[in-house]
Length: 186
Ligand SMILES: [Mg+2]
Ligand SMILES: [Zn+2]
Image (spheres, rainbow, N blue to C red):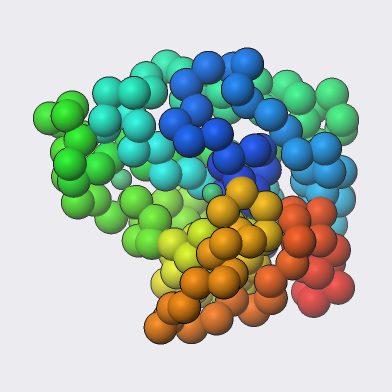
């Protein structure tokens, strides 16, 4: 299978810092159409999100699930679908002892993408990663996918920051433009 790995905050929904209440979860208006187009083209849609707020005691695991159910319902109403969600609850400086670790899943590490690939039989080299921060690009490249940086969320300021790592394959305005680019660069 081929997949598009979507970052959540700043890519699929508005960046809201530590998102811990549903009333702060705001969809980008174009996100539903973008996901539906990728669904129809046969891509699995895998959301992968760093949620260090869990390790920091700001966001509950239960809320992460509630937020993802909410996202799925909203997409479903528009005929779109996320196939799987992966989140990293860890942080090396977390206050929750069991989650205070330098893990393999926190982006820029590619652990979430690798786990999804194993779970869902994804061919990473024929897949794409979309996100608004360099760590999304780095995780996607480390996993072997092609990468798209979007200018929503932190993306516009991230684009202006110097970095030593390799560039994404493309930088576009938002997830809708990312979907369009993916569909024309299969
Ligand atoms: Mg993000
Ligand atoms: Zn982790």
